[in-house]
Image 1 (spheres, one colour):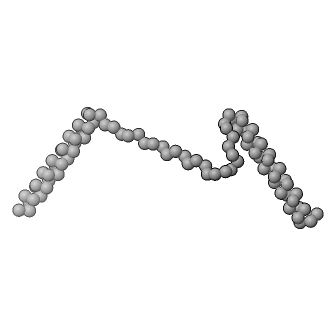
Image 2 (cartoon, one colour; image 1 turned 180 degrees about the vertical axis):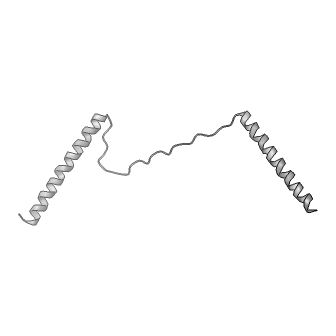
Image 3 (cartoon, helix red, strand yellow; image 1 turned 135 degrees about the vertical axis):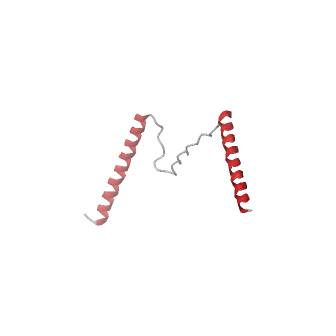
Length: 88
């Protein structure tokens, strides 16, 4: 058998296998109940990014945070005042 004859036989076998593959894919899709898609055309759709939930604080939590921050900044001001008094 010549080289071109071998190549033709291989190409025919490849076509046959591709058509069998398409038939198998369609059978699987039919069993799964999905709609068949065009074979290998275009880009795949990107996965949707998982959205983050917006964090919300209750009024009580907000007041607690505000009170903690007031105490924090008061202590910072006091420490700064003591530092300046020590330098004088």
